[in-house]
Length: 534
Image (cartoon, rainbow, N blue to C red; front, top):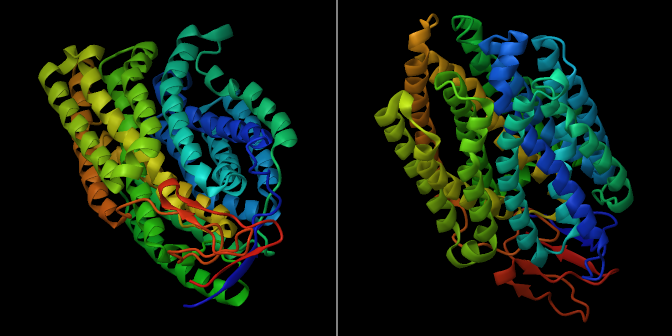
């Protein structure tokens, strides 16, 4: 389909100047990165506190899954909507609403009186995070010129690694310290001062931006996305506990039909008023479509690994939260290190081979972990786990930072909110599915009634079984990555989603120069227009 777009250089609304002397955009970056960091820490910090929560509240295994999966489900279901709301009503506004709601929900989690209230509060927390997180990439995309985004996304990858480092460690410390007798509750309450600071500083330093063309919220699309995800993930999470009833299988099969209806409806919506919830034209961009598939499967693998890893160390091996948290430090440092060098140094030179190497390294690390767990059994130590965790961490770091840049590299600014929502949605949807599959690949390998002396070996065997699943998922990711661009391409500043090349008006009226090594497209002077015909 041929279309044309003529967009002013302020296509995403007023943005902070890209002049190096303007420090406001870096303050804005620090604020939105802190919010992203808070979300990342909140996921990993909960995993490490799961045994303490179960012991204190008497939560069932199903409730424990829902404490993690409920957050992921609400997050996944709301991300596309959150991104679109930012496009319509302003990314700064939605970011502030999201961080305020996230802070409130964290307080409710911290003061939960029973497992049911905690699960409900976690679902609310996931829903408000869905308003906050999509705005992070959208604000970065709208605020920073193309040639600086590689650096920014590299920093984002390092933040991911840092969140992975501090989340388990902070969760372990807060749980072990039992501050004021609150046991696990400070893992949520710690979000309060951070969220309040982000709310105050965000109002001051973040500049508003939104889509240039008036859009309307697609309520039917929102309902279909939410229904489809719920029909798929709820039976996965509760199926084993309920004996895999027929309605669960029907629900999971019916979710595919709901997603098909969503696609048909969104196509019609795009033709009718140009305001679909899901911008399907983005999938015509090969790098975006392939990256979304990688995000989905990668999230699935991580959803399985991190929960079963925590259960294995604390409930299987009987380790304390602090010992389990410190065991993960080599993994997290390796993620942070590899993420920091992948975007700036490795990907510009070697392209997608870096990401594929990352997938292979993660598989090697998983196989090492399976071998060590089998060989050393219940006597395995933290030091013996260090080697497979470092190998896995290096592999994950090579994937997480450059993948975001590759997926967004050809996305026009006017669709940055929708694209950011889709990127996060696919990873979180995969994460929620992975958490749901824990009942199959982990708890399904453990008998319903175990004698005390059988618990450790049963958990260790279930852990090894789960890692084989994760290795299989990563093998699929390796193959899907062949659809990514062999080399990184320039960012598209505006226009159709299918553009491979960009022409624009430079300050002197000549075509905009393209610096492919820096993923850059020169931006037009204010008042000039950038016209694209994909």
